[in-house]
Length: 287
Image 1 (cartoon, helix red, strand yellow):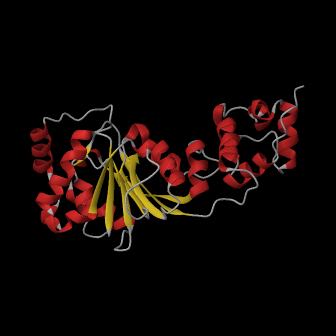
Image 2 (image 1 turned 180 degrees about the vertical axis):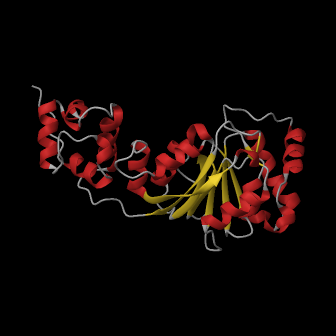
Image 3 (image 1 turned 30 degrees about the horizontal axis):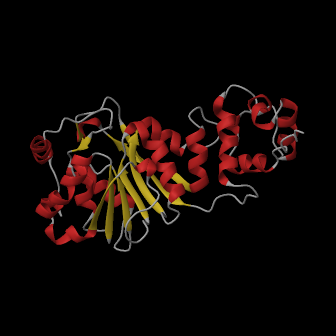
C-alpha cells in the first residue's frame, strides 16, 4: 500500500498541475504525511465489508489509503476541479482499485442520496469551518453509517466528545450523543498538512447508538437543545421561555420532565433533553 500513497512532493505536484492554490474558504488543508492517513484508516477500523463515505477527499491522500481495505469508497467533493482529478489519480496510482471508487461532485451538506450500496462508515479529513454540521447532517441522512472517524479542529473534537458538566459541552456534544458514542482518538500536528493550518487537529471516533426512546421527532428534541444553549448562562427556566411560550410554561415542562428549572443546559444529557421535548406545552389556540 505504501507506494500508492501521496507524499509531500506528490501533493504539491498534483496541486501544481491543476493550478490549485488551497483556499481557506473551502477549508483546503491537504494531508501530506502517509503515516497519518495509515493511522486514520487503522483507527477507523474499516474492513472489507465497509462502504466508506469520505467527505472532502481533496487530492486523494486518504482515499488511496481507504481503497485497499474497504469494499467501496464514495467520495463527496465540492470542488469540481478536484472531483474531476481524483479518479485519474486513483487510476494512475492504484489502477487495480479504481473500480472501488465513486466520486460525487457535491456539497456534503446537501447530499441526501449516494450511488451504490448505502455507506456503513464515515471517514474524512473535514474542512474546519463545516465539520460539525457535516457530521450531524450525514449521520441523520444516512442511518446505515454505523461507525467512523473524522479529523477536525482540536477544539471541535473536544466539543463533539464532551460529556455533561464541562465548559465545552454544548449543542454539538448533545446532538452527537443522539446519534453515536464518540471519543477522542488522538491528536494530529500541523506539520502533516499543506498548507499548515493555524490550529491543531484531533481525531474523533464514533459508533452508532440507538437514540433515546422518544414520543416526539428528533427535530423537536434538537429545538430544545438549541434553545437551552442559545444563552447558556441562563437557567433552563429562562432559556426555554421562548420555546415553551413563557418562563412559567418552561418551568412546568421542566418539572414534568424531572429536571430542575434552575439548572443550566450544560448539566443535562441527551436523554433529559428528550424528556423535556416530550413535555412541551401545546401552542395556544387562536380564534
